Image 1 (spheres, chains in turn purple, brown):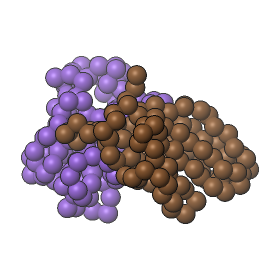
Image 2 (cartoon, rainbow over the protein chains, first blue to last red):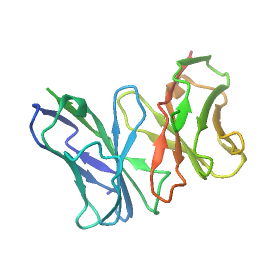
Image 3 (tube, chains in turn yellow, purple):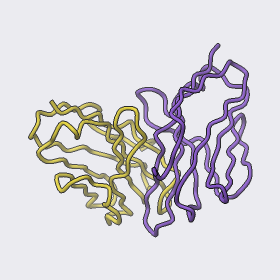
Length: 114
Length: 112
């Protein structure tokens, strides 16, 4: 596609509910990143995929967070048993090359846990 | 100490002035540095990247890097009201991994 596509754009979840956030990166982009951005803060790194391999998941805040990219294109970030502190904007980014740096971000998913 | 530090602002400048945004980082081995612009309610947009000491110019934007001082800056010449946004400094860590760490951002207001 022309850009990084994320869905849903907004998600309201009741505390304890499981959610799944989808990211469709730019076609051909090898690298895919998930970031979490709280209000008034910069994006915080969650995890990185190179094709289908998850090479860095050190930023995932707890074992309730899980990400996958099974075919090296679309990625899903799953949050189990959501808590209020999970409320944030979840940003997906992709890049053609390997490693960190100059990304194209999607529009994000704003998750609100009530 | 945060890995990437920025003054949160807000920084207010009059239209036509030069806006100067600053960033310091802690990982001395970092090699790649980026500036992103984020409008309210939107996602970050890459505007500049810099990898070598010195200045890099792109239109009205100049990025400056001083690795010895672990300092990165962004100058915006002839500031316009449309430049009003949060500017995020980002540093790709030299840890063998793939993390890029973002600062909390500096809010810039350009007054017409």
